[in-house]
Amino acid sequence: MLPFRTYLREEADAEAEGEKLKHIEHLEDHPINDGAKGFEHAVGALEQAKNHIIMGANDSSLTMKHDGSPSIVYGHHPETGKFFVASKSAFNKNPKINYTPADVDKNHGHAPGLVAKLKDALTHLPKITPNEGVYQGDVLFSGKDKKVENGRVHFTPNTITYSDDLKGEGAKIKKAKFGIYNHTQYVGKTGKSMTANYSPDLSNFKSHSDVYHRMPGHDTSKVKLTPGAEAEHDAHVAEAEKIHNAHGSYMYDALDKPGNLGSIRDHIKTYINSTVDTQEKPTVQGLQRHVENKYVKQIDKVKTDAAKKKYQDELTAHIKHTNLHKQNLQRVFDVHQHLQHAKNVLVHTLAQHTGGLTHEVRGQPVKPEGFVLNHEGQLSKLNDRNEFNRLNRLARQK
Image (cartoon, rainbow, N blue to C red; front, side, top):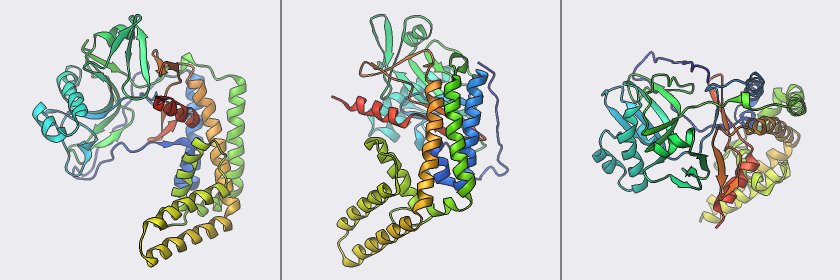
């Protein structure tokens, strides 16, 4: 693995509000979120990911997602210097910081599963954590989460079951009492001002047999982008650019129609998510049905005629807006589809290597959950949304 590089931004004002790890967006959703700027970012991210694969690189700018749970924040608090663990509530207005097992009981006693994980983290993570710094990672296993069957060790932190034989990684996993996958580092002089760094410097972490510390990255020297796959990727990017270059100066303006139940932009995102289940190709007509269903449900909920009229008028305005901008909205869908297809080519290539562990859901082999790309300081989710949806349906089967 290549050495980790650190891009640390110190705050000018220690009391300023820091930037914390946010929801990671799908790469193809960037144009919906940020218009022309989002499109340029998405294309740049695709180019970076493709070059990463071609070069056979392995660093924390492109990492395989791990289906760990829960996500925890830990390290030495910048204000007290004491070791702590926390859930994502570390960043609440009134943060829940745990220095002792008693703190865990006080702050999280209503969630016994979380209590056990945090107490195990308090016990074991100090064995590998540097004497300063704050980190965020996903718990892979603790306590009795692991099992050994048929010469392999298995753990299931969430949906995916990971396993390996009792050599190499499997031997480390069997011996360890706690597993963690770190993906973020925080820098700042106060808890409030901490800023997320998505290329964490983990070089100062120690080794200890009690802790299985899985490092971020993905070894792309073990995958191959075939000429046919590269041509397919490039063709979809070219088609997306063709639409964007011809219509991008005004196409994205159609996304800004506001409403009490969300803007057209918001409705488009929930509609696209719904098409993953239905397997339909996104269209303006489908979007209109989606918006209408949402508003009809809201109209049925409210009691007064005035409230019903407010939502009915808003629905009418949305339908009028989508009819008026039908061509541009369809272009947005077409750009989205081309970017998604280009991304899927790279995702399927990256999935040729599963990081040294097998992945299963209910005994069936599956691909990795996906990948995360850090392009110009912004994270993008790279996964096959249809495959991920299939995986979740498989996990829910009885």
